[in-house]
Length: 141
Length: 141
Length: 141
Length: 141
Image (cartoon, rainbow over all chains, first blue to last red; front, side, top):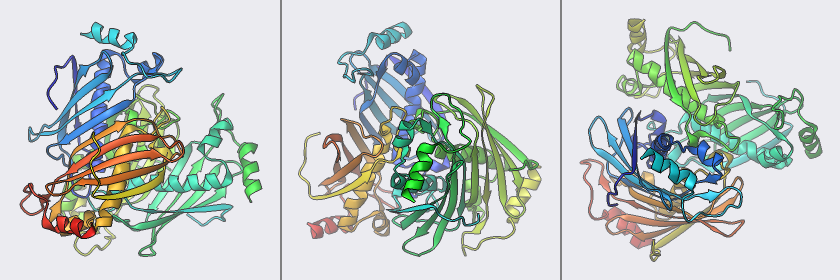
């Protein structure tokens, strides 16, 4: 996953909860999907286009592609920081993520998600991002 | 929790998945809430009043009270059976649950949930169960 | 659930994440079990007896009884506060919880959990709380 | 994701539960990670190398890379089939997945996971799959 240039960035700190751990005493790999969603919401809030705003604008933006690379493990009580970088927005939303452990300063995970706009009325896939979103990005930048 | 007489009963078998375990290598206590929902859905299907039918009938039925008593632990790969007994339906839905391990024949958990009807239009709480539901119970019994 | 006197209290604020919502656009009832665990961990941290310390002390403390009463619903982005009050500790740990919405100032949920100590070596249930824990509570109070 | 040749295959049927849905009334994208784990466990059971056997053999096999492509959405009560194909095993475990809806016969999701062996004693990454596993694959094939 080559590094793309961030258009908008956000980050979020959290402490790993007990209920996210598996019998190997590390975060179960599927739970990182929640962590990157938390950071994505933080980033979308910044732009003024969170899930509520998406829906009011007449679109939903489902995830169509998601990849996570696991480098090291988070444990109970680990303090972690999730970085989210918006790297594409004109035809779709691509966000890159990096999760680091604030205790060990190690990178734990690198990920990306891709979302596309779907018109809520006719359920049609949009091949260009709707102006209601791209205008917000341009205004923020 | 004294034993009430079952009006309608259903049960469901499952195998404990890895992702439901916690670092003590037993099912994390909160995951039993999913298991009893699975059995509740099985029971409501039997009566012909599952979540889709509830909504079509103009009501939602949120859980207002839930209690679980944990007697023994389920482990990875344990085969378990969840029993659900409808024990009240005229003013609210009360369902009693019992989870048993099919390997050890031990009872793992006893629980109940209480649901009340709320009119989807005016959001008013119903102090009697709507006829659309009670008729289905009577028809089934 | 009558109100007991709090021996130690803790609270925690959070914002409701998207992935905790259900199709009724409210927090799925089972997810409150995570919220009260977060507040319980906060309280146990205060006393100096978190899950890691429990294990080092030679005991695990499984939940044996849990009840939640749902009064109102949390929505996406709701800011909520979870209060945890330790109300029993000499023979078992009983914690009362109250979840309030910081936006509407409504109480959303009242709950309790009961935990008992089990010796990690012989797996025997302890009918009195081990001194390693009660000493910490007394020291804190 | 080009199609690789399956060395061992397994599949699993399930019905989409209510608690896996999000406010868009479709399965929240992160929950597919559980579905593919269920199918992976089914496949590993077939070979005789499930999570318990892994640990007994002295290795853990964490996921190091995971990708999911979302093509269409599963809804409440959808009957789905998850296919898992072992496509690499000599240096690492690579499994390809395909989730299809048994009601609409549509493909919902394509995914893969990559796992590597780590020695439980010295925590060293294994650059070749341990014989205890490759022997089982060869015996099964």
